[in-house]
Length: 140
Image (cartoon, rainbow, N blue to C red; front, side, top):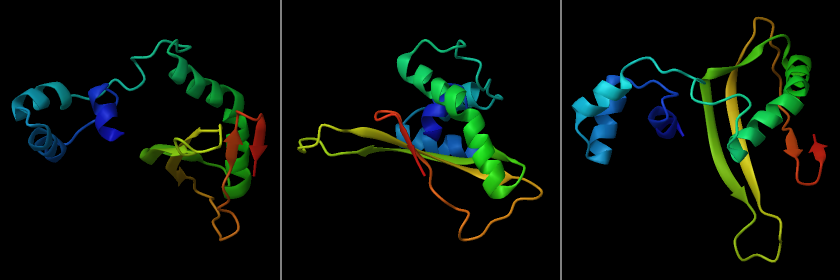
């Protein structure tokens, strides 16, 4: 995800990152330095609202559930925000090709550090929230 974000101009790279990328992709380091050592223009490449269907659906999730996510995060952890800098994500598939189930889903995991001065963490406050738009349900 980070490499794709870099190539779309949405992420920054360190010189060490570029050395690894140049070696891995067999590309000239100078070309990568020229293109990727500047500060990225995050968010500047997408029209609002987005017109690409998948990007629009992600935008729609934030529009529909954004304040609900904020309320649940604040209720569980205190006033704060989820970092998009100290952040990781992964994309997985639920449901196997060729299975008898017709239901195949995309699973997006977003892990962002909580930036809060009054955050409270305990073993009971780290629940998982699953939004299942296909069935129109929100499961807790």
